[in-house]
Image (cartoon, rainbow, N blue to C red; front, side):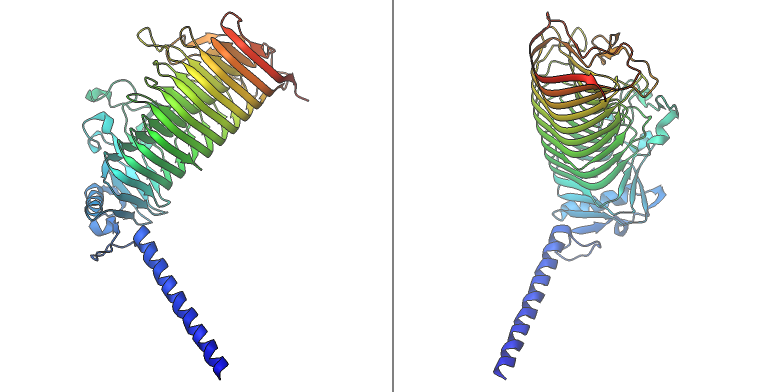
Length: 475
């Protein structure tokens, strides 16, 4: 009997402990993530846009209802604004506030407006979703933000689409006057994760003057024939982490820039990229310094250019690491910048009014490339490349498209497109280049005019060290 009472007591203790643990876990989950319905209790952390009047039919604008939910959420101390699944929410620009996470459920879409009147007067604020001078903000939920970029195409062309430009407004000039998709401007503690960004009319995800940004498990898709639909542009921002992203777009995929301030401490890893331009590109806006950037474990597929530095405005670049990267580059129409280079490092003056910066301390390690063109490393007078290292680099060269080769591409500015013999590595204006365990292989019978592993002039290239460098036909 005593034994039975002890067993019963243990059972009751375990049951009560389990109930307390479950209750605490549920309470913690609700506090962290909120419920998916809006209530009036003090513990409310979630606000459904439906409760604020949104229809979600993809025809009528839901802008004021979405904004009301965001404003209420921020005023309450922050939480999640929910876009329930199964609906399309058409909107003009909406403004994200401090403490607010947009939770776009899987099966829900936010559709960006396609009219000029859908956006603010200043073109620098043309975004479907805009956060300015706020903290602790983000976007998640597994759903879609769609910029309806194809509605901005004036003429479809497999070489390069001709796009709408709102330059007749005077708000901006040239052929790139279109709204971006998502922008965080002068924000702190930004998190974008588990969301799909698709069909931007212009740049997709723009991070400007931000500190402490995390971008994780984001899928970005832009029409492959559309220009200027960059994937992720990181501008004048520090302490940025990009992980597990898939980017399939026409223009540059991951693009750090410096327009008004330096850019430090950016890491991008575990990503998959396809683009008709550069998969990773520093520049071309480069008025200030880049330092402490790491790109690791990235797959680049069928892109026009792999790893690129396009420095044109006097900023300096130092301490950059590219590691564990697989690259496939091929030719596309020459209207796109790029000539199928797996690695492209250039530093030159954009125009006569520009200064020349310096590029130093670049490490390329554990790189594998299958490409239609060679590596291009080019500094300039007064702007040398220095202390470059290639360690454990495997380069396979072959041709499989019918585009014409035999040119090097200095665009934008500088010398433009220039006729030049093709080589495994072309070097200009370099002081210090170390090569260790680099294998260069040549495959196929279509390599006419491309039988020179290294092309450089000793008058501009100094202090080259080759250790275990191999060049051979592919067997």
